Length: 230
Image (cartoon, rainbow, N blue to C red; front, side, top):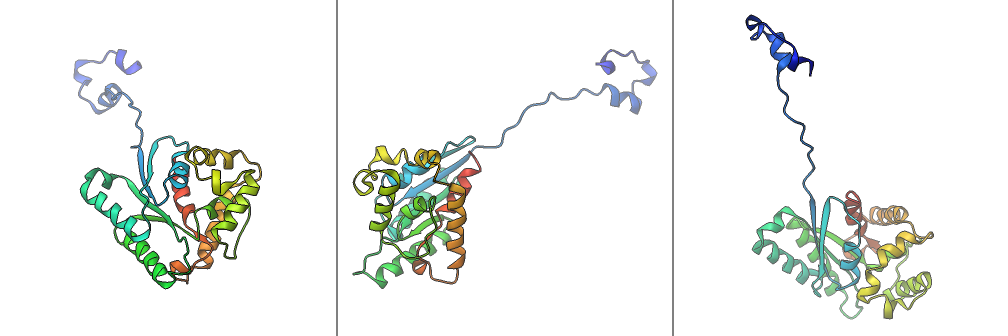
């Protein structure tokens, strides 16, 4: 204000000291970083997509849905979507699927699982995989597990923790919409510990083929990305 009202002689108007005092500054315009967009395609139709959509994000948005396809087929479908929709190139793309071990398929299933992860990485698609099941991520909020469980054991444990019949009710859309909040409000659940436990499992099995890492989940990597925008 002083520089604007001060009278200056005509002969001094061009001098450097005066230009500095009277220079009009542009108005300050608040800037905001461009909103982050996550595109999360899941194998499951309810549990995974509803869980990720429940994150209370600020300057970011999540589009998450299930395709009902597994492993390589799921990744191939996402690659087709990326090819046909240019707008997806501006989004952070993830695929989410798990092993779902079937003893009758054996090595054939493991081979498909490994190919799916490799194909995704080759096409710059992030992968949140779980061996044997996505529910490992939920249980890790409560305890550390370093021995293989089957999904029946995970479902039983969650039924005990949440006072429900998880295999029957826990897979419904309405229940899945509440899981994030359940974990947030349960004093016995801890996401920070779940991330630590999942990372420990992942790092300790780094030398193994992806299909042989069990129990293991990289869901923590996607959760860490989402947490940046809470």
